[in-house]
Length: 161
Image 1: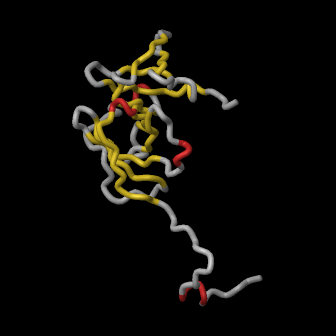
Image 2 (image 1 turned 30 degrees about the horizontal axis):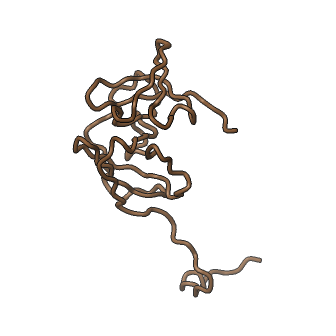
Image 3 (image 1 turned 45 degrees about the vertical axis):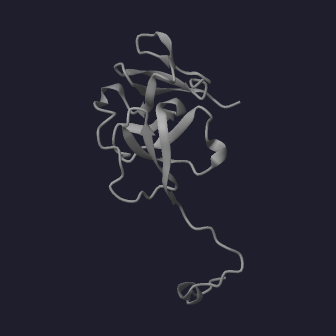
């Protein structure tokens, strides 16, 4: 059984103001809603149809967490799938999703945002909030093929043992 922890989040909603609180991982994301515990102690269920994104944040006093520029300035270096998320309201955001398809959840996508120094550490986007998900690139090392000839650099390397 996986250990559970409470994570600080800001839930960005489509037609209402954002709500901050705590989500218990992994149990806080049910099949139909996000289970949120507010700092005041109220437990609420936010249906995925209302939720645009769940931003896992460093602290509540950090300021803006959902800013206008949510794209990479250049090709990212973090391994994974570089994706563009197109929301129902036409808004877009980019991020890095896991390239392990067994880790994809049926209710949505976990992505790493473009700016890791910013308030958001990770973002969960429900499938109900999206109109389209585009894969912009696959980031990572190339797998080695058996029987491949070594490059000039590799053949000039001295063997140590």
